[in-house]
Length: 177
Image 1 (cartoon, rainbow, N blue to C red):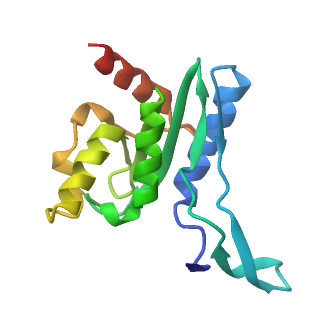
Image 2: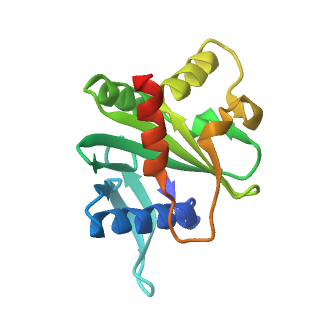
């Protein structure tokens, strides 16, 4: 598998999440790190020193892994321009990793940024697995906004942070109920 640079897709949303992680760390709330995707550079623009062509060394897991108040979390960030989220944006090895993570007692999820609406959706692993299984069985290969649980859909606030731990707390409370 190779990668041809077209800019960093998803970088706006990931930057908000990175700032949130720093905010959480500074306040002792959580320690969550971005997991770099291992690549082997093939072509480098000598003037800008940017990688223009590279190969993935191995399949990555998820974007972020960490601990929040003793709870292990892992998640991936996705961006969506329309009201439909294409499941092709989540890879089989990521689903398998999230399944294994949850089996060990952790919380796995996606954060999906709907740019047109400026809303964030917290998709719990079990919800993602249900949609993914539907696609594998020959059903719809995307998720429509109206299929989502509205209590996990929130507007982006006028801040530099994505308070995803509020979603995690909501998820934990629902699991305990």
